[in-house]
Image 1: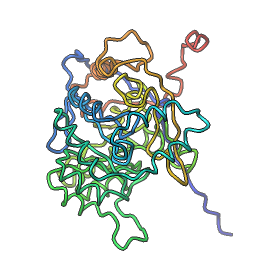
Image 2: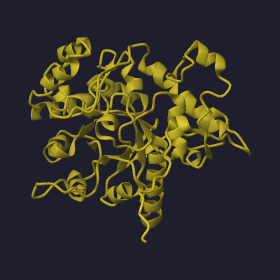
Image 3: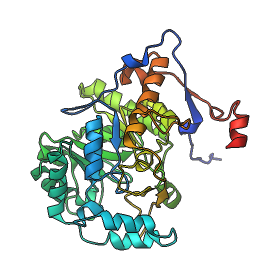
Length: 381
């Protein structure tokens, strides 16, 4: 009698499941570590990317984040390209009752996206001295990429819940990343999101400049609840990093990966780098800054979807600044400020001079890492 075949599953790990093992042979003064992030022809002082979400990035935040040393991505399908003055719309979203906000956003986001505003926002960022990075979904990429390139965009991001190099659709000719890369010339194309070795490697083979890693871990995303899909971020990052390193050995071309989602504090951020990330994308943690456009609120790109919303508006409150979040000083003990200091300290403690060194740091499965010995913290929390 034949034996039945059972689907096999492996264990996957998120940030709360693991810990970084400190260096065993030497440590380094945190001031001596190197945090730079290279994306094609651009060199950034910080390995941080601000998420393409309307509550996180507008023109002013993009400029400020660029000047701080990172890269901020503007959502081309949000309020910034639907309204001449998005401020009243953002105020309305922030003030809406929780029970009504999704319906309100569906109405707000039904206004047409205006091609003239795409170019205008890019020019505003560049004229103010920022690096202009913009994001579009695959459905609008062909049209928006050409407009963005004409306006002088520096980095173009193609982003959806799940992205693959081969997409089967009813379109006679869908989005082909090889062609997009060629059409964009020296403008780097970043693509996401993915969580597996095979998908990451196939995307890299199309010539793109970087890959975003993560499906559903964001504070405002409900894809995991609505669709049931996703892989915890540590495992997703490790798998994507393996694809990056395999591709590099085969071709000599290094394609960085950016862990996108779930970075709520310095500890999670450091674990993302130790798992293999070259940079991290930040959302809710930046939405809490005075400079963010969300008025203390944060929501994902799929929140206002007309038929199947996959997000929610999250209240994060405004309780910090961009300067404090990135560089401190801080008196907070929750790891949400001075991310640069946290990363430098973690790398120095592990004896890692560069991000590439830090990626080689040992990690252990440690589900008790946040609770062991913390009886009083838990009781008083």
